[in-house]
Image 1 (spheres, rainbow, N blue to C red):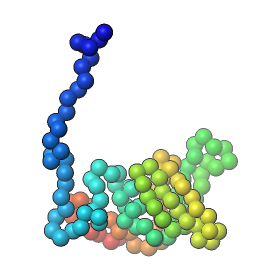
Image 2 (image 1 turned 180 degrees about the horizontal axis):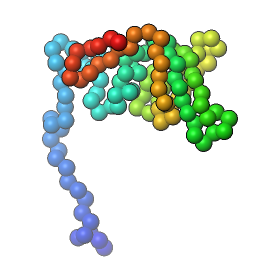
Image 3 (image 1 turned 90 degrees about the horizontal axis):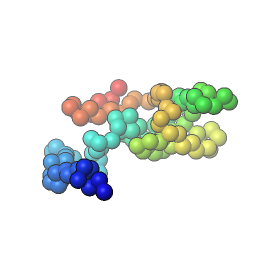
Image 4 (image 1 turned 120 degrees about the vertical axis):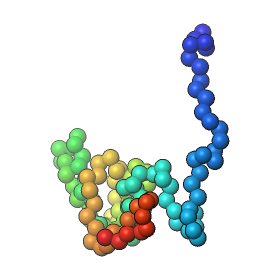
Length: 119
């Protein structure tokens, strides 16, 4: 019916325009995708470090603001997994609720335009 008005968009099919190869002798497993969020990359680089994650749940009256204390186990595009060593509890935190993270150790940070930095 509306085939002449709404056509499917066409995109370039050359995938080589979007591939990024790591510089030097860096293995692909250790590089972080430029498509991923920077906060995810920082959390992933600091896996195994003790942190305090400050989280706000605006729709909750009981848990408006909460602090999760533990070790970063995993980080994904939309989540952070923290293990609380004192209670052996595991927390899956959606990054949309994350305000900030306080590290108790040096932070490993990779700037795509500079070398690795430890703060």
